[in-house]
Every structure is written in C-alpha cells, then in structure tokens.
Image (cartoon, rainbow, N blue to C red; front, top):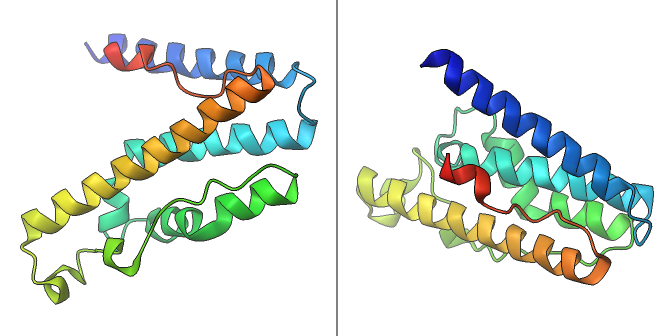
Length: 149
C-alpha cells in the first residue's frame, strides 16, 4: 500500500511539473509572470495540504503561510505586472492555538474556523488562477482530477 501511495504522489508531481513546462511555453505571459504563477500554484498546494499550519503557531510553515496571505503573494504579482488577488483577511481570521481563547472559542471551534478560513483562501487563489487561465490561455488552476485518487 505504501508503494502505491508513493507512486501516486510521484505521478502527481510529474503531472504538475509537466503543467509548469506547458504553461511556460505560452507566450501571452512573460517568463517572470509564469515563474510567479508557478510559485503561487506551489504555495496554494502547500497551504491547502497543510491548513493546520495556519492554526499551529509552532508549525514551521505558520509564519510563511500567514505572510503569503498578508501580502507576499500580491506583492510578487504586482512586481511582474499582474493584478493582485486581494485575499480577504481580517484580524478576526487570525486564530491560532495560542489566541483562540481570546475569541471565546473552544479548541474545536477555533480549529474549524481556521479550516474554513484556509478553504476560503484556497478558493480565492483557485478563482484567481482560473481568471488568469481564461485571460491568457494557460492551465494554472488545478483541475481537481488528482483529488479523486
């Protein structure tokens, strides 16, 4: 069973790598824009797969993920001349394993709230990538086919 999972993840990684190469060949965007969009795809995947890191303040990805949400993604997009995503985020969305009690939440309520927030972030990024695909003829938005496995 472990070998099958390993093969599945390796196959998904090869598929993602092939998509990056195919997208980079589309000349409606500059190489720098393709680089940023590929980076966003990786960030989106990492955040979507590791939503718990948004909540767990000691997670190695915690600060990086919040940095992406708080503007690093938009900063990189605007540097290469693409529109910002403008992920909707307020102070109320910042809930961690340290701060949840300040919001009068139970641990379970806080974990659910941050999971829902993480899903909204994922949806915002996917919608943005879909808009880019429609405008520039690329295929950056995940198809969802790999999620069926």
